Length: 221
Length: 268
Image (cartoon, rainbow over all chains, first blue to last red):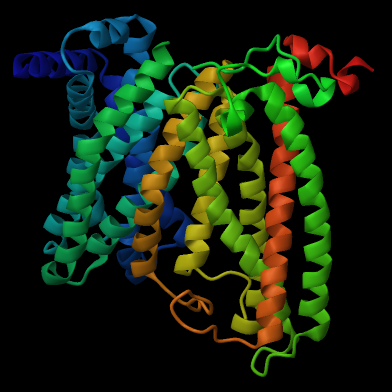
């Protein structure tokens, strides 16, 4: 069963490596959002420093959401998804593998880019680990919750916009806890928010693959 | 489990007792769209009357009999719309999700239609609660809108309603739309408490509840009476609109059924 999981992740990573533009578009979008704020707000260094964690979090949320509708579409179009769900392997495990590879392709690059953007905004180096950690957990929550929306909107008209209407309200708790952790004055203040965020991720990890597989079965009927 | 039997003439229209489907007795017989259509018509008329009655009475008690508040002056009187609308916006979401999930689990078409019929009413009351809240906030807080926990979670509730309706509108196959909507409503129901508490810990200005089952209410009796009457009025209105919309949805979805072709309002 674990071998199936690894094989599926390897396959998705290979597919992503063959089409690097998709990964780079998400990253470019994230970097662009980071660059838009100083242009709109002005070059007030103090204001930008205070807004930086919020900008990073909103940027990561929007980028994660944009990449979400690609999670199942390619496999749905060429029939792979149907074959995967017909296999004897439990569907929730397959979906967990899909979400893991999606996070490696779309979430991890955001987390790696975030410290660079933080430095652009003049954040203190001590804040970087806590912001990065909050974004690691946050992108996990985004990928897991987004998978439900991606499965529900699979093959529908206006899928990309519809997914935003469905998953944005669900992303809010992650945004609140994550941005609070990123905004906290020191590591001690950030801990409770990070713990709440981690418990949210744990709940999503348990429930989301199951809900996503139920939604996928509806879409494939 | 399909109790619908579209060939059966509804007893209420033809006064023929032998037309009852033998396998569905009691209240479960109303899972058939034909029966529910007739029942919803009767109930809707009843609720329209009670909405009018309680609404007029409640507004009279609230706007004329209730005393002026010593802190907020006359501005507080919007409570008679604001509080019932806010209650309804939350209750309808839970009821809607309940019907959607019943429709998904038991595969009864009518339950899903009921969920569809409730969604716009719920969205309406959520919008109404937000709007009256803004009107109330301006004279008392000095701002139309503040980013407070209750306001924010009510706004998110509106987004959840809109997502539910958008998902169903985007799905061409009605049965798939029903099930997808149920799935979303289920996720929403699990998420509403999480969203509520996350937002509450985040920021709070809105006053706490004045009425609870545990303690005596902290308001004058005529105010309380007006509030209860208005609540009954708005609940009746919500039920009347939802049932009327249910009838429209039944007409739309069951358009090919024989019992429907024989209805007097369809024939003409």
